[in-house]
Amino acid sequence: MPPDHRLDRDTGRGLAHELVERLKARILAGEIQPGQKLPTESSLIQEFGVSRTVVREAVSRLQAAGLVETFQGRGSFVLALPASTAFSVEASQVRTHRDVLDMIDFRIGVESEAAGLAAERRTDLQLKAIERALVDLGRIGEQPSHAVEADFEFHLKIALAANNRFYADLLTSLGPMMIMLPRTRLEHVYTVSDATHFTRVTLEHENVYRAIAGQDAAAARAAMRLHLSNSRARLQAP
Image 1 (spheres, rainbow, N blue to C red):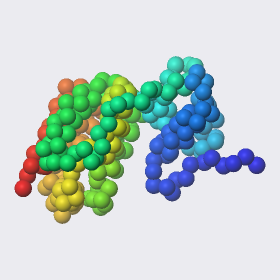
Image 2 (cartoon, helix red, strand yellow):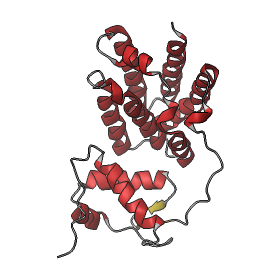
Image 3 (cartoon, rainbow, N blue to C red):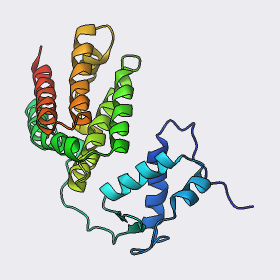
Image 4 (cartoon, helix red, strand yellow):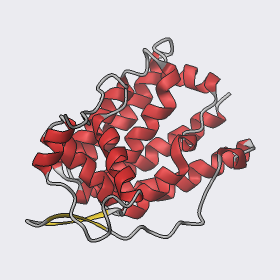
């Protein structure tokens, strides 16, 4: 009997993320060579026991990562592995409060434009992914310790929806460390005990989502800029 490759729904990670990791491992191991076609949607659905939506989101992430190229009516083909990039920001390099504020300034420039592109280019599937991340972020009042990961996932989904792989590559290289709120600030902003702050942050994220959903690029850029500028101000608050 062949091995069961079905994804474990109890791991707590998203199914699409798990499928991406499985397929990425095959590509990096050379099991699927550059130029070869990825398995069809139906075969991936059968092998991993996931929905068509999960498969399409996983393929979209692989494309955003520059690992595959999708051609209408032909399928997705593996690309030659990209050369490693020299750009890297380790958490240990962000040492001072000035560094933290500089990171926010950097993100304002990058993510405001990514949000605008996402409004122009996002697919319905990518919009659903942003919406799911927004819902997860709204539940952080129950588990403030997960705030960094949930916040990062929301911003990453927007970068993916820009459909320019360099935005997603950049945010992925930064990782959750780019959401640099001290634990005391996390508890202050993301817990229901401080309803005013929590409501304000939630509304800022919702405004970004609504602008992207409405395909209003100018509003998406403005909403992301306002959100990150407010985040910067919150980091400076006593």
